[in-house]
Each structure stands twice: as structure tokens, then as C-alpha cells.
Length: 126
Figure 1 (cartoon, one colour):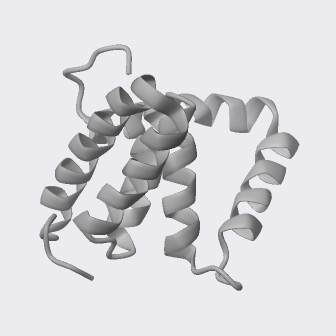
Figure 2 (cartoon, rainbow, N blue to C red):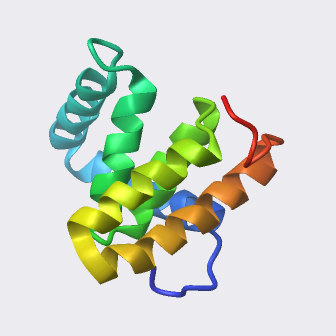
């Protein structure tokens, strides 16, 4: 995140607004990417929540704060528990080392922020 004190709510909103320009400038690409995302994240042998946990781990390992914001927001909406988040982040840190540990802290901040804004308890098991 460019400014570590920034809100993940603000970050995801700002990135979405900036991507609107790309949606109008490259509509076929953006539509195709959206379709790919919906197909990849749909329930199948793995649940949508499991897939979002995987996407979060990859976002942490790739050091992508907007990715963390989007996937944590989805996880909160899907009812992910803090324990599920913590275990996912543990695997991301195991696979990505120290840099992933720093971004895992950002994921925790995002989870806490999105949990408060949706009225979901960050510690309640789901």
C-alpha cells in the first residue's frame, strides 16, 4: 500500500474507481477478466470461501495490498472466521517468508476494518 496508514476501505474504493477508466478504455479485456474471475471463484469442488482464502494467500505472497483488500472484503462477506484468516496467513508466510509476514499484518488490518464496517465479529467462528 502506498501509504501504510491508508484505510483498506479507501484503498479498494480508489482502485475500483481508477479501474473504471480501464473498463471504458479496454472493455473487452475487462469483461473477459471479470468472466474469468467469476468462473474461477464459483462454488465447485472447492467452496467460494476456500477459493477466496487461496486468493488471499496469493495476494499476500505477491505483496499486493489491493488484492488483500478485495479478497478480505469478500471473505468477510462470506463469513470467514478470524481462525480461517490466521491459518491462511500462516500458510502464506510459510511459503513466502518474511515479506509475506509483513503483508499478513496488512491482511489482519483489512479483516478488522471490513469486519467492523459490516458489523461482523472478527473473532466469531463461522
